[in-house]
Each structure stands twice: as structure tokens, then as C-alpha cells.
Image (cartoon, rainbow, N blue to C red; front, side):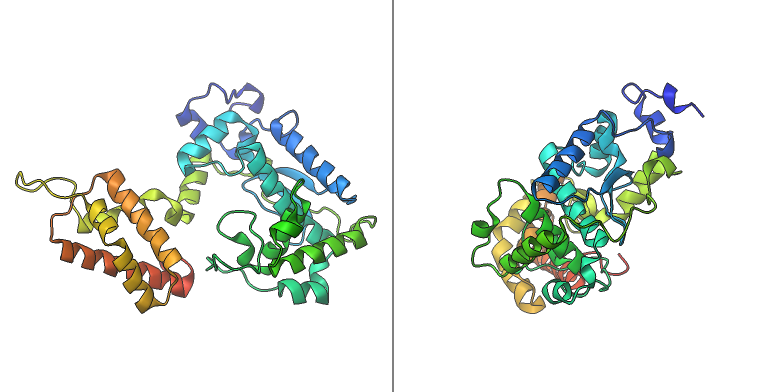
Amino acid sequence: MVSKEKIDLAVVSEEDLLSLRIKDLPLSMEGTWLSDCVKELYQELETKGIKFKPVCYLADEWFAPDQDPQVGIPFYLAHPALIKLEKKMMLEAEGETKAWCMQLLRHEAGHAINYAYKLYQSQDWKKIFGQFSKAYADAYRFKPYSKSFVRHLEKYYAQCHPDEDFAETFAVWLSPNLDWRNQYKGWKAVEKLQYIEEIMLGIKDKPPLVKNGKKYRKASSLDITLKNYYKKKRRNLAEEFPDFHDANLAKIFSHSHKDDVKLPYAYAIIKKYKNNISDNVSIWTGEKKFIINTLLETLINRCKHLGLLNPISEQEAILKISIYVTALIMNYVNTGSFRGKNG
């Protein structure tokens, strides 16, 4: 094994890079843009009068260890070559821009402060956010128009768990130059923001109840190769990829014209009947049209990207697409995931 000091991530080939174990990557936050982001987070906390500064370290993903006031930052953000690889493998590198990174840091800092001062144990916290001990679901269903939750990260993340609701609310409260009183005026979520304001005043000069513990899943201890890391990550997040529907769409439509007969494009047919499909699926599944329309837009985009053609009648094509969409939506209704429990 080549020593870390001899690995130049800027010139190593993708094949060789994928063969490396994460713990063998020559990575550090010091002297990188991540270090500047962490310093900015600390300054934002200081501006709010909060003396506690969560320890931040390189890990396998964004997270705060359960009830441990630390913040894990994805290792790939520590080097441009790894950001490039992450984007190729996962289509995006979560937190790759400064603005995005700061959003995520504020969110994770909310978790860390919650754990450091055991705020989740108070009756007021439980009354406002819910039970901290509530189990996390594999997936969650959100209400896109709810005004009971702030909107900070994508996918209405505050709605997935009381702990995430607190972290998201804290992140909004901490964000500089954000007038949350006006932005959330008339929302029930403003009560949560006011609670954050009050509770932070109460702890700002107090030492944390919980000290930093073990750095879970830190990059320097991960014995998995990048190839296997991405294989596992892509499998777990299969539903998030554009090609998730491709195999099923290919069972309905065709990639080529039939017997020199020019066939219509599949995406155009779905687009033509999109509103009708959405109305009917909503009636029989009880799901909101927002979710159904989002799914249909994904199918339209995939059909267009793949150049799929329709070799059957419009009526049959729309029937098959309607059945497919209904099956996906029923999985979503029952499990929060289009794949379902066994997907």
C-alpha cells in the first residue's frame, strides 16, 4: 500500500482512486475551504452569544452522532478530485458550494447543541417538536404546503422527525441576514423559532452537559474502498437516481421504430394526458397531486432522455403508465418510498 504522503489526488487516475480505502486518502480540513466554513459557523454562533462550538471532523457523510455534540462532514468535500468523483457517482456532491455547506453546517450544529445541552429532554421541547425518542422511518411522507415547519434544506426535511424539526428550525434562526419573523409571519412554525430564541438565551453562557465523545465513522478509520463505498451508497439511494424507472419504462415503450413506421415519442403522450392521469390517480390513491405530478414529470424527463417511442395505442400506453404510477404511489402512501418495503 502506497503511503498517504505519496498519493497525489490531483493526478491519480479514477481507476486507481476507486481502489483506495477511504482511510488511506491524504485528507485534512486544515487549510481548505471547509476550515473557513467551520470558522464562519463558529462566528455565527458567537454572534448569537453561544459559547459552545461543536467539533467538526471528516466522516463518511453529513451527520451529527446521536446524542453526541459533534458534526461529521463528508470526506469528499476536502479535495476537488473527490468532489468530482462524488458528482460522477452520485450526480451531485452534497454541500459542494459555500452557501450549501453553511446550510448543512447550521443544521448539524442544531443537532449538536440539542445534544450538548440535552434540550430534547425538556417538556417544552417535547410539546413543541414531539418525542425525541420517536423511531426514524426508512422514508417519510411530507406535506408540501404545511406552515407548521420551516423550510431550510430540500425535501421538507423538518417534517421527517422531531429532532430534524429542531435542527432545521435552529438553522433558520441562526442564518445571518434572515428576517425569520417576517418570512414566517402567520406560520405556526414561528412559535418554534421563538422557542429557539428563548432557549438559546438561557444556555448561551452555560457549559455543555455532554462533552464530545467518539468521532463516529471518521474518514481516517473507514476501511472500505471508494469503489465499494459508492456501490453501497448507490444501492441505498437507488430511488434518487434518474435511471430508477428506466427498466420499467422500457417494458412499456420502445427504443426504436417498428417496421419502418415512425412511432410517436412516449414523453409527448404522457405529457398530453398528464393532468388526466394525475386526477385519476389522486382520486383512487388519496395522494396529493403535488406528489403525483412530480413523479409524472420524472417519467416524462426519463422518456425524453432515453428517446423512448410508443409502439402501442395511446389508450393502452396511458393505461399502463397509469397502473405503474398508481403502484408507485401506493408504495409511497404505505411506506414513504416508491420502491416499497422490499424495493
